[in-house]
Length: 406
Image (cartoon, rainbow, N blue to C red; front, top):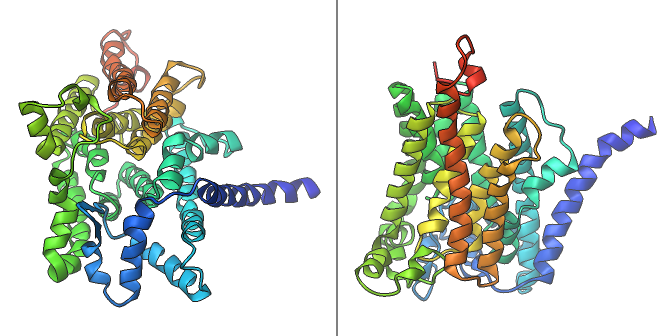
């Protein structure tokens, strides 16, 4: 009897320890972050009766380029902190916020473990080790504790829910979830790209239209009130301001500090990121065959696509590695057989790159780690075709790994 009670209580104790650990780490390592510079002032502005003017907040030329969705729980936390009279203690406020948003990290961990189990064909044991692979990943911890980006676990949780619903054939629900994810940050487009290309490769044009249309409607509905109230600042924050800020390094572009390449990247690095993501993901989808949403290949494609941002953006921060590291971890754990294989190198390399960025490693070294992980992903994705074309007669598509959407 006592053993059964212990088994029931243990997950809650571990979750509480994780949340407390996030809060304590924030207190111990506190420094002014994007949470203090942008998100907290935006929440305070909303509390003072101007919720549609939050994008007027800026720090010099710097602005918040994240969507408004994560401000809903943040504003509730800010209201509670203000009611308790703790708003003057910035480290304490940040610790409370990070601890609360740790709940979304727990939801992300649970959904990631579910995704691994679904891809492997049987539920994965929700052990401390399996959860730790996601919750203790350096990019996520650094992104939340060091940089104050509370939207990261919420965004990833919504993306994983999108993949799950799309795999179940609930395209409209998946579109709504994708639209909500877009309201956390625009970089979600890179994670959505493989899903769209998979549907197009399978000639599921109606599903593609429903997915993108529903997502666009939800995202537009969420942004429209802000655009009507203060369109200039909204567009500046979410679209145009990036071209005005200086390049701070951390990517391949440190090799071109001057000249026409540097001038182009200064204003249009997002175009390069998007174009390379489309080419690489399209090559992997076409070369490896279309696959079912929720399979390990999908997460490899998503890791490949999202890794284009930290590889090719003009300024790169550790939290840019959160998405590719999470997707690569799911891909690594979801593949059949032992987890002790070379695929673990992909999430490890992404994690190394994130830590390297934090300690000021040379941009070329960081890009080398990211590029090596992407090469491993791409080689594995294209390797599916080789195994499929050399398969023995009579073997099914499932056995060769070349599974088409119906």
